[in-house]
Amino acid sequence: MTMDTTPASTAADALLAEAPRDARPERPERGERGGDRDGGDRRRTGARRRGCEFCIDKIDMPDYKDVTLMRRYVTDRGKLDPRRKAGTCAKHQRKVAGAVKRARHLALLPYTSEHVRLSGVLAGRPAPSGGRR
Image (cartoon, rainbow, N blue to C red):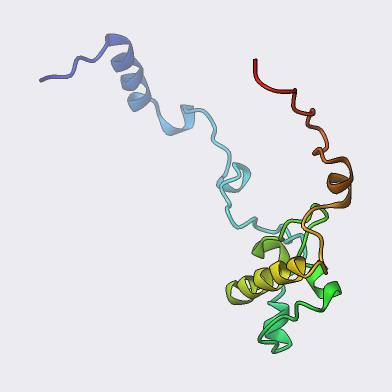
């Protein structure tokens, strides 16, 4: 199979090939085009990445009875914080999850947030209609 080329594209290619370099449109320098992935002179913003609190303090197992410590790893909605937000390593995140679950079972921590327990309905969601038709 041969490829058909249109006369318009061939003519445009021929003009560009014949044009001298100084007649071509100006291109901005690489630094002006935003090609730098590392940011160049820009300073890094945000907090410095911290290590796992349990590894730094050499704590092997988080204590489920320490409610103030356990609350740091639970959101205001009652969900466990992810590792990237909590700053724990994988090993201690699994142990924190188990300790939080144990504290919930013993009623030291709530399973859900207060307003969900009182109203019974999630905020922003309408109450379910009664039955099927």
